[in-house]
Amino acid sequence: MPDTAVQAHAMMTVLAVRGLRKTFGALVATDDLDLDVARGDCHALIGPNGAGKTTLLAQLAGELAPDRGSILFGERDVTRLAADARARFGIARSFQITTLVDDFTAEDNVALAVQARHATAMRFWRNAFTDGALRSPARSALARVGLAERASVRASDLAHGEQRLLELAIALAQEPAVLLLDEPMAGLGHDESRAMIELLRGIKGTVTMLLVEHDMDAVAQLADRVTVLVAGRAIATGSYDAVRNDARVRDAYLGENG
Amino acid sequence: MLAAVLHQPFWVNACTRILIYALVAVSLDLIVGYGGMVSFGHAAYFAVGGYTVAVLAQNGVGTALIAWPLAVLMSAALAAVVGALSLRTSGIFFIMITLAFAQMVFYALIAVRAWGGNDGLPIDARGVLPGLDVRDPNVLYAVCLVLLVAFVVVSAQLVESRFGIVLRGARRSDRRLLALGFPTFRYKLVAFVIAGAGAGLAGALWAEYARFVSPDMASWSRSGEFLVMVILGGIGTLAGAVYGAAVLLGLESLLAGFTEHWMLPLGAILLAIVLFAKRGLYGWLAGTSDA
Image (tube, rainbow over all chains, first blue to last red; front, side, top):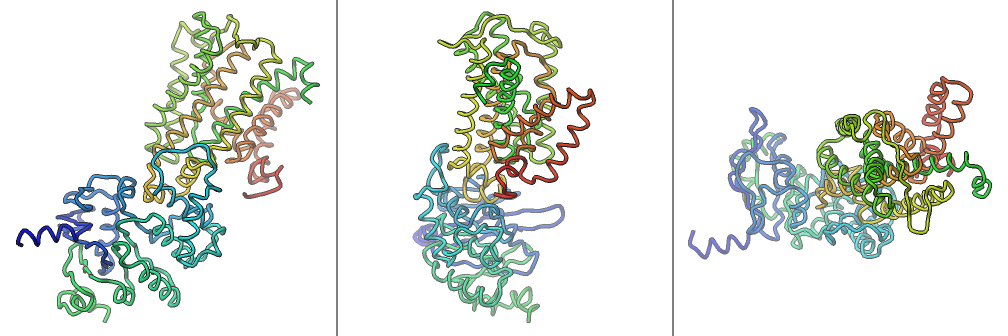
């Protein structure tokens, strides 16, 4: 590449993975993986079960340490940073398995995300449950996902679909630079999926997204770029149509689904 | 009630004991009930607070203005060390490690001859606060009451603060709080140190009250007693811990009057309360089974 192209590339890429490798015993979950996520893109990560999508996401979020390779966030090497430090730099993640604070209300859960964005110092005195600086951003994030009416319901009492929406509201309230979405459609009914896709279309472009998703409808509608992961390796990257027509991908993945 | 009590030394002493134990129980509830940190070694901080006052008195430092803050500091320092090591674990391992540290304190206190070893250390010097004679049981009672109320008020504020909701959130979902960017280990450690400091203050008060400290203050059965007070009163209620301390001490002295095997009926009563009052005595009195 000519120098100017390298520079343009560096400016565009917000999250870069280089030679990432992670093994569990004999199983190679991430196999010398390279990945570039461009600023503002919705970049989908697809692949058959066991391809290493969730393991990769955990390494990007800092919950799992890679054996080797590096993860660059902008100019910064974040490979050795813990999950909480990465979150403070602007890498947020949503969870597939609910990890909501189940005895807090929906609004409390979002308010925690607002608080995380605000302050680094501990504050011991002022009541956080009535603090407008936390509560009004939390309420507007809930309104954005259509949960305004359910703000005071305990997280554990929300329906599954509502919990997925709450998951998204929390991620939005964090105002991240990069949002790692772990199967936001998982377990949703048809109508709920449609609503979730609409919501994600609404935030597309305002935040860089790395979307792990099985729902091909969602991927087709949302993704600017798609990377196909098979056995821990990225076998193809490109637009949804380009990837769909790639012979290797058809063999490895789409073919088996018909 | 207060006025009637103040004319009878027996009741003043009994109530002072309750207030001191309640202070330990409230501090323990802070980490058990809100931080999910079940410490089985809370007696260690109680003992360190007490020994600090006793050893200072032995060396001629009788001013409570120096001795009590130093007792709090020593306990907080111990809690910082124990917490920094044990908070790397959770669940049953956390319980065991906190117990192990408390046992170390217990045997260390037995080992120090200069502090009386197994026999403990009596306090001869007179503890003084400016303008207050804490040797007077009524004054000591009042001081304990004020300190307990202050600790409960501060704790109640703390658990509703930004600090408090991070602590409570991490109890349920540590992974989520980390993903949001909270260094949860640091939050838990701070809470652990505050709890240790509270127990240390109670230990200092106990030394003033009993004019005597012994390794028994750090024993594992004492740690267990503190946990029983918290559970009895209702985990995560703060005020409940005060009821728990009062009821446990009350039952102990009541039943001991009937039979020397008073532990047996006490066990049965505790079992009944834990089984039938979900949120402990606090929940039962407040008429709610969940909050």
